[in-house]
Length: 435
Image (tube, rainbow, N blue to C red; front, side):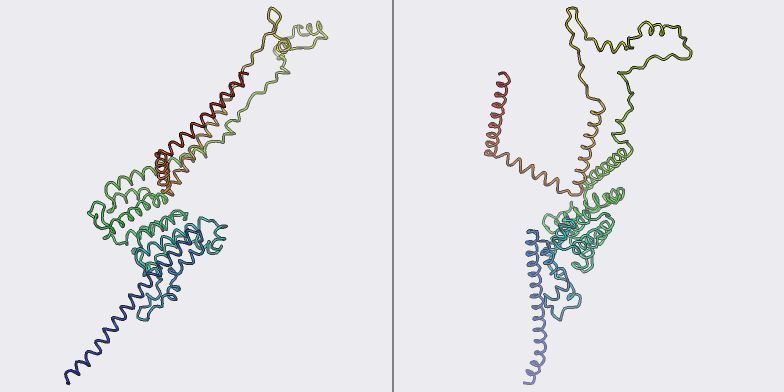
């Protein structure tokens, strides 16, 4: 009996410790599930508000998972957790998919609010809030906030999709791309490269690796073809392509061609701008001095000092004192041309030809406007590459629609009826003209 009692005494504290560990682990699991469900609920509500263009409600809703103070009040954190966990926001403990969705929505929301402008932004989220959001996006501090709140200050742990969205935000809203370049270089230097294999490796059975690889290539494309050229780092971009371990030979060749094209376009644009500044305005080019001719009062011959007067002019004036001096050309103007039968000859008036200078200036203006249109389109496409994709989708949709038989028949009927009306109208016009 004594042995049994001793075993019972020893087993009781052990059972209590096992029960306490089990209860604490169950509490941690249940708390983690509550956090995950809370993040999903907030994301769903904020995305609905964003689609309804209620930007203020979407911004306030996302603060529930982005603000650490809100996380402490809403989570009922247990006392066993450490201080860092209690201070962390809900988004820091969310799953990878939920984290990417929330941060992507947040960055897209900030860009939409900034694009509203000061007036509409003031009406949407308030003047002070709009200025704060615009300032964070333009000076790049929004990147620091994302790293601090969502990834505990470790920039290499930021998800590749979130990095791509942040880089796009700074590329479109920030005047200087120096901060964007620094953050991208820090991420590329500190991120985990082991989960991002080269394209020539066998990763057909690993979906996560393929997704990470695609996202990282997008980041490299943004960094090499947009951020570095904006900072005039053309040579470094070329060397970076050659030294990259992630890009294969096909990607390197494509990036080199794209970089050379962008540099050629920029050089041409700068040369065109310099030529426009050096060339005088068209008004000054067309303003040429023209001699003034007085046809009504032709100048008479004036005798120079070397010529002598032999009395001929005085004799003419004395012979015809009452006859005014009339220039032969004025007499010719006064008399109509007569044929032998006495009928006047119709005067031939040469048609006025348009001045060559006006045509040249209009042609130059048209060519300059066309060049500016091409340059603006190139700049817009470089800032927003999705424009080409949307245009291709539009063409594909148009071709698919035109490929349907009912659409073709309807277009044929409409075109036929239009041509019939045109033929009838032309026929009536011919009849009226004949009558």
